[in-house]
Length: 581
Image (cartoon, rainbow, N blue to C red):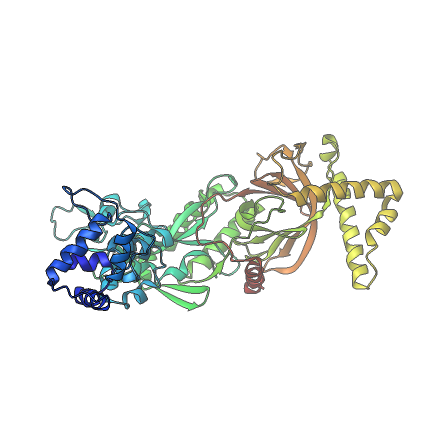
């Protein structure tokens, strides 16, 4: 009976038998065969059609009359088909096929699927479904059953405590018992509730800002604070420090722990303030204190932050800035508010791949900036800042429609010659801005060129401009041959934190940099020269300050960080500037 129901693809066998009897009555059949004989004949015909031939039974090819007779007797085979019957609903699919289908659905809709029927609810208890959801939605790669042996990816997450049950004083790793957990619990109680905090964030630490990356790391959700390499090694990789972690205990409840300080993880809390904003709180700030008091805390912080002692920093002004930053940042005790930030979208016409870069900022050390492209403009926004120009401000604004042709190598050494070239473009820009403000028609460039150097000079500048615009609009991916490398050297008298800088460049453009007094007083944009070295490095010469900043790309993989579209990204930039203004 069950064989008939399974092969016919209908409900219970009683309904199948009733349909068979009705068909026989309509055809005028007075057969008095019993129900068992009916099942035997139907099964025999399906077996002959290739549906369920046994090992010791020949497989016969069913003819048209056989298929027609089976359809008339209540089967669901098409007249043109001689194969097995097709299921008429999703419920009739084999369990292994349903597992594959449910594995493709977002985890957020699976609870609704479980409400359809008991069969679906039972199938959704399959670990394969939830394991695939954890891997595809959150990038989880580790096997739960091997998690305790493998641990997590960073040694900073291991905490050694004396086991009170072992009098010998052996140390143990504080990792939960994952043998009794499954992927559904991890998805339901850990990954899904905290999915909104994954990605890049900027902490509200006054002018200093920062870069936090919240990721799924094994069975942990970890908030990593990204720190630039020690000054002036701008091309070294970024440093990371865990600020908090979220993980599962045996009670199937997610636990938040603060990782700040040097005494291991302790109780913490996370609250979602509003969309794209959350806050962290440490419930045991005594874990942040050190036995030697504030002096020991400062020495430890200085070694981690700068890689040196205070005695090794001879510049008095730099010592003041360092001490000021320690006092300001340590008062938060890891009780911070974070706002979401996005990586800039990339366009084919971009001069180079946008993204995050580390840059040298004199006595302020290394800072992180975000390079993005907006038409003919390249902009670098600070993610970390200082008391002069805080985080969130537009540190560089480069006009890609105004190239600067470098002079011969010997003339590049003369700061006056370079200043003359850049200052000429700067004055031209100011005249255009003034005339646009007065409503003058857009014939400014021709007039400016005529005033600066006559027709021949104007033609030369126009030719340089056209060539540059063509090369900029083509984008980095439009040509396999990079631009020809040009010799480059810093002018004499220009200070550089890193003496090792590229000696060739691809292109140079006019731009402005933001400078200000302490406390972001009297901010102004000063002209400078943007120098593109390669796909991963660029520089900026601050002519007024006679200083040079070298920027190197941050190469870390940052998941859940890309902006949905350009509009959202530009709105984020506007919000960042309002946070610190």
